[in-house]
Image 1 (cartoon, rainbow, N blue to C red):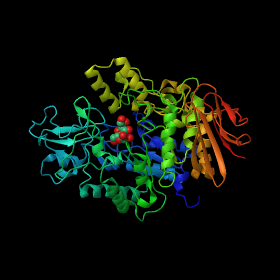
Image 2: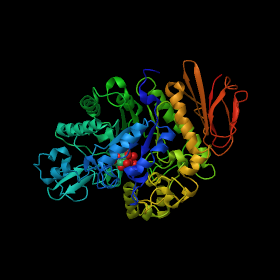
Image 3: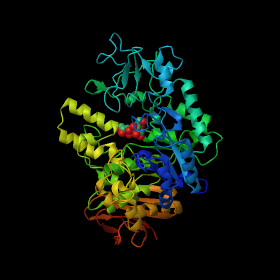
Length: 571
Ligand code: TEU
């Protein structure tokens, strides 16, 4: 236990600044607002705060489009405010991790402005500029250099009229991709990272870091992907976990982190990474990253039409995926554990029951997640059992992915509006982005002005003040889970063994370390469920449960109540 890295015993809390706490009445959360809520974080007991982007940005993708990496956007405050927040968190023993968005910049970043100025700009090669497809007139349909679709609908290439060439943007057209093939780009990124570490931050959450290396042929050519979206194609194989990814990350490690103090956290966001990729990315001996976010478990309810065409979760699939990641990273590497973030719907609405069983299902889900081996991430409001937004009309959505997808679908006209709206209501990123519900007053204590995205009307019942007052609340359950990880080496480092892989209703597993064993069960349904756990657990002591009267194990069998979860220690 003593030589395990510090983050094996840590819990990370994600703040999406725009929706956390407003202090100046403009309806957008800010850094001085964060200062007011530092006690909430300390009470929860988290070890690290990760801030979604605070940098200067035109806010096309809520800050994931950065125009100055070394300044704070005036929406959120100033660099001095940030220093104050970092100091306030450090004073409570909480580390600060910054979002690092370096697959792309804003099109308003001076680097891109210079790059687009002319074909022989010294920064031309800092981005992916390509002429129209052979023999085609720039700007005509299908003339894009490749057929790749952007993550935010439409082609991933934008024609720049001034020079007649296209630039690549895997996300919005205001997020041009940086060309990591160019060593000057990498050096500029590393210099910026060193500047932040020197300023006192404790690490980075690296946005889509496994997309930075693209497959390029000897002549600089990029290849089409299989045709999937009408005329467009799926280019992911051409830019996901690309050929130079590990080389870049090892170089970054040498240039930025080598010889720095201990106590930093490097976590990669890696959509499309497999377990094998994750082993390579997080094996400490390779000096790349500490851990990565997998997307496999949050893709299980995506249907044939993609994420906005959801299907019910089959619990056996969830066990198969998370079990495979637990096994795959048991010897080398480390897992990140999460249900929620700013890109995912709220888990209590997604895999639980956000109506009558909100409290019990939210605490069940938390128990199962936090007892896995890995570093748990709590997304703001998750610890309050916040639910999806339940928006009902197209014009209520603000998220660029949702807005652009809905516009494209409605223009195509194949799917009736009601189904599109149902898809958005279930899966839109705006579900995670409604303001944090602090109390039962107007706008939930988030702002005195008009919130940029409406507060969920259920804030009159679901809010931090009510949660703090009720010892059996979701909040206090999260507090206990955080404390348990801090105290119990089995939770922190124990081996993981999946139980009942074929049971479609109950999630069950064992953790063990040096002969000490924990059993964890969670009922993923609103009905009573009886399962056979085998001998050896009948006089196990209760460590933690989510119901007032936990069901007992009798002769190796237990009947769990709806959404019940508990942890027991073998005698
Ligand atoms: O997300 C990248 C990503 O792969 C997806 O989660 C994506 O946001 C989308 O949901 C695909 O359906 C990261 C950030 O977390 C996200 O907020 C940004 O929009 C994106 O990168 C671009 O920076």
